[in-house]
Image: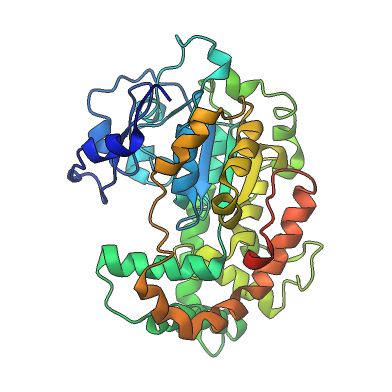
Length: 409
């Protein structure tokens, strides 16, 4: 721990406001190596950084309001982990950032090329919108073919509520929780109606088809160049057992969101048929990844990543388990990443780690009580499919199961 009193250190840190290129503010942290680390302030922290940083070994890819900030914070406490200058780089989803290229991306990470015991030091980032963006896994697969992906999931009902509270507190949202739900649900229902009865909803159907064509066009553009970048570092090319599977036909890039293709609706799971209502719902959810409801349909998001990465490169953690059994969960994460276990000093620092804003005790949560049963009903089928998907791909390792008080799938 280097003798640092992290609670006092937090109080001494200056919480600077964002500059013109940032959308939110976050605590400025300093780890044992002297690395600047904040949640959002990428542009400020990149000032003066050279383009010789090491490409990441891991990415915490989601989910938003699902414990990813806490998980990344715990990772940054490990003595063999040096984090990116900001948790959320947004590099693979923001067009203007991605256009700056790999050298710009390198600036977000420390240079590990001269570090002692290089093979024991790793770096990484954590952008939660990667999980729901269909373009992100294509781009990440191209640049970082053997990257380790960590996904933190949270009960989607609670995730929705936390999302709503965050919109009220940080974005100035003025509508009630039930109205927020109804607006999103009606948008989804409108899409389903358009695809179920296109002759009755011709105008809406054509708009949805235009939206889908636009998305497919972007995916086609990404698919046009699938060669792995030669600049991928050694640790990204020589992970035992991973390189071969990258060229397995199962992981070849397939156009379109998982549920927007007949293939996605014909998996060996219950209620999967390209002509049934369930398939249409999933198609509409895939076409609206930023929807508050869609963000909690994890089965589609994880299946999309499994099209590009083998299960052994992905770890799924449940936020409820992370909070209830932090030390055990993070020791499992360390094992997954191939680094030594956390020592006692590092585990003690978890108490003062910035865990993000999950709004678990915010009074605004109470305003959502009247729609909780509807949220539970909406997510029930999706959660059941998620459970089957997780058990199929990770039958023994790297899936944490919540206790009976937090069972949601």
